[in-house]
Length: 359
Image (cartoon, rainbow, N blue to C red; front, side, top):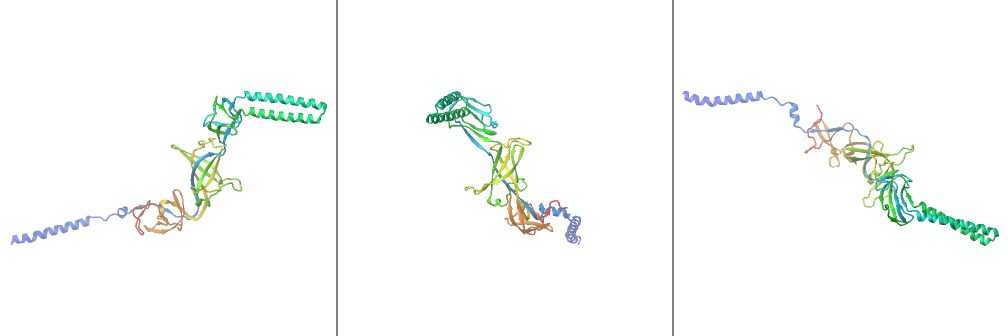
């Protein structure tokens, strides 16, 4: 009998112990805090929609070029006997500064010869004037005029033995040097004017309707900000938007907006805007009414965004009005809607999420 009781009670005791342990575990288990459960939900960044007029921002880029470029040609032949210290590639020169001189000896002789010929012609005219023979006087007058013309030409040739800069410039190329013999009509240098720089900025046809350029009625100019990186340093310049070229590039199908900068080599508070420098450009255009500018990450499939409402994301159709460098301009959003900016691996309409920064 005791053995039978033992065999019956042992399983019951074990079962009872198991039940007691299970009850104890259930009672000791605390409900997970709400915040711990919520921590497993994806966190999203949002932006509050505030529809209104959005100014269009246009980005472009281009190279700095001179407003004036000229190739100077020697108008006389001879050997180069002197060049200026600044007559070297990349150097700055001033307007009127002599850069190169050709041996003037032959041209000085030509001037003296022409002066003597003029004096002789004037003497002949004086002699025939005494006898007052009309035919002889006409011939003598013609000789005087011819001698005067030859003297003027000789003096011009002598002046042309010195070649000077026609404007403030940078020497872009030199094709003659000390001791070299040059012929009349040969290019001796190329100069880039530095009184004004231009940047041709390509713009898409879709951007043209937003552009503002030229001067307003009050004389103020629409401007662009030009920038370039010099290592860790970023330099900026303000340029006026002068004109839109009235032609389309046949290969790229873009327009060109021309920006101008006066005296680009005057450093001021920034670096000189050197010729050939590649710059980024940014300028404002017309406003788009009743629109919202958002980061590109907010737009999905070019046609909808997600808005956050009651802790869940919901798909919201929108109209893509304009795509810019890092942003999009959208229509179809209402005031106060919280637009989701984050990109999740999986985004489903009605999915619960947490808003970044929400308590």
